Image (cartoon, rainbow, N blue to C red; front, side):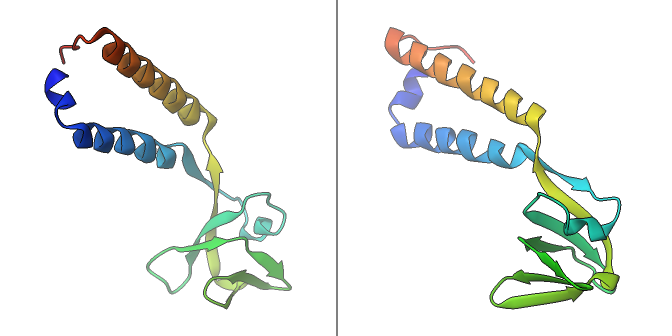
Length: 123
């Protein structure tokens, strides 16, 4: 650890990675039993499998107007609900979020203790 103190930019990079990477680990996609449930869902982001498309379409804050899914992404986008084969909602995973919070608290505590005592932890 003493060697890393000579390079504060390395420590900042490690800290930034430890803060940013876990954010995506705290969420997951949950399948909707019927794509028409998008209208009734409290979620704001959906991943859709569309017939005739190889890639999945991610939509934010969609609305169902009649038999069409409508959302804003560089202008008004529409998709007939009949083309949506499969829909998934994006939601927070409470177990992963709690685990990452505990891991982050332990990392911060160890970092503070090492810096206060001036000793290094052998890794």
